[in-house]
Image (cartoon, rainbow, N blue to C red):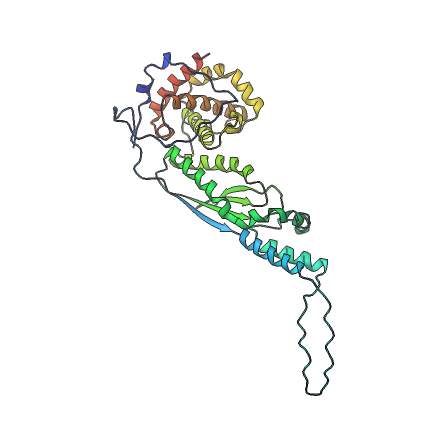
Length: 355
């Protein structure tokens, strides 16, 4: 397994200036990991030669919804007139003129039933526990679909360039060394908050409702995907064994988000409130002094909300510092605990000494 002895990179740590990151920190643009330097093999690990594999399956219900919506709209826009009475033939052997069938007028109940069938047949889930409430939600939503139909007609094709770019950037940050399986479920819902993600045992599934603002889904999508990729790449998997691994895990996850979603305050990347980060910034030196001697301890099984916030913010500061020393995220998450503890102790000391 590739190793990086962090201590060698911190020989001059005590003299390195460091400004503590605060809630106004801006993210850097993602860059491709640099090639391994020809330096001492103990201090730099070579990058993998092969690119990570992210397998994406797709279930796109939106195109069927759009097709049926357009068919119904065409039907409803067709004039309905009573059939003309057949002409009386002049002769016994003359044929009556052909009368074309007319479109029947739909009653409000029939129209509601047709819309409900379109919705049920083109949605991954519909009624929940209250079908009447779902039908009312659809009745309220239907008039709102028309201005959104251009993006709905694009379906998954309209989302894939952005999602693919995020996949690639995050995978490169941690250098996935084994394939991961994702599935995108794209559909039209009734404007209720319905973006979500779930693990089904083989795929990490993401549900994208196309009638909603796609930009609002990018942060939770990136947060979930960062955690998933990190769990697949880190030497500790999804279960940090020590406090230092927990702190580094939280810091790396936040910086992965910051690398692909730019110009957000730190509390957004950390998943904390602005007030929490302000308090943690004010107490950071005391908090880090308390943490520095405990880095080798086992990771707490059930940290409190307050503890997790402190560890997350400590990780944000430490990983920020380590990246400024040109330590890559993909190397940082592949370290022996002893090396990680030593390197984190030196980095924490530098953060504490900073003004």
